[in-house]
Image (cartoon, rainbow, N blue to C red; front, side):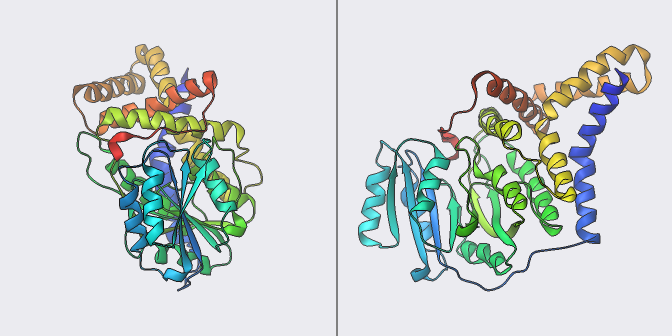
Length: 365
């Protein structure tokens, strides 16, 4: 029990506190940022969409207004068998704007639609965006400047979450996550991206299992291929988060189901250099396992509490935190629900697997 207590406590302390501090220290002592330059490759921006009639017109207007050479930009909406007005809206825009193209795909999920759109493209770079976000005018120009470095195969921008309409405090967590991503990028490659704004050299693009998604799989796959996964904090995308913490919990469960599939089946640790291997285990594996680690810590604290001292103190601290989470919305409740989402997602993955198709978080539209 003591080993379980100290092991789970140490792992949680490392992934949430120790690793971020170590990453920041490494970024200052041994910086190795990617090269950047004023390059303008041809780009196909691919928007995978399923029943996005409420936001797709706004998304296209935003992309068409980007500060990027018009002759080098193509916008492809990969419609995943949408059965609302999404396709009609895209076609209407395409009739007056030759840079816009509709690619209707059989229902197979976001990644399957993205794979098909890439195969239909001839651009030097393929960039990706969600239908419900907007980009800053200079986002694409800043995003592709990392491709001036020949080692860079993938680059993600920075997602800025707007204030939620309700009780969700995802923005506070996301600011910490983007800061940590910046530290990782300074010493090699990032361990994760985001679906709102990222780009890949077309020559480096790989078809991944449609259940996996690009956010977690692309960075480590690029490193396995001897390439680099960069981060461009100046390339901004804006998105509305889920309305409340409970909606965010449901979204996290769906997201973590895909993460567990990648951890279990994606061969993540094969052929990684030691430094990046430490990043993946510290930032991804231990973070996804945090729910199990908390259960182990709570159980061992209960078993050891009669010994008093640090064990009783740890138990009381955990019970106080859970009490604060139950009392009112805020960071304690957000952390508790998101941590529990990792456990629920693992249960779902073990029992039912993970579907390739996705359902939208309506509160984010």
